[in-house]
Image 1 (spheres, one colour):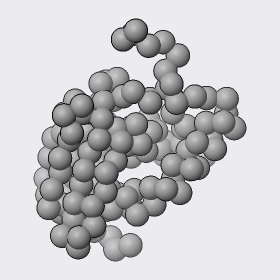
Image 2 (cartoon, rainbow, N blue to C red):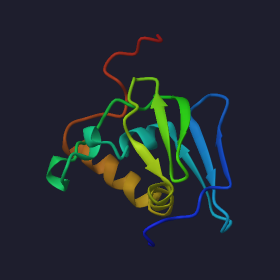
Image 3 (cartoon, rainbow, N blue to C red):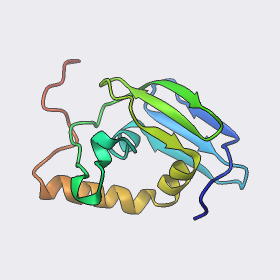
Length: 127
């Protein structure tokens, strides 16, 4: 993958705020769940400062995206309803996530199981 990626031609959050559609000029479109983006946030909180520091985040199955803010001409900042808002999703990173979505999701589910974590939050305040 190149160092940069072209800006998306469309960024659209669905009405339930649980899916983000991103389309690129090369006719590639990706539909990301809010959960997928939250657990793959490029923030230091999730990624750490090295692979050894990367964290597996559980309990985000019902997380929603509450805000999308452009950052220059290269990224967006997503705010999630759990308060997380420190990751900058560059066009390059979003294109990588889209092209690697299936493998990353399978690995995430494997890591959850391996670490005894679940996708569901421990406490559901909405019930």
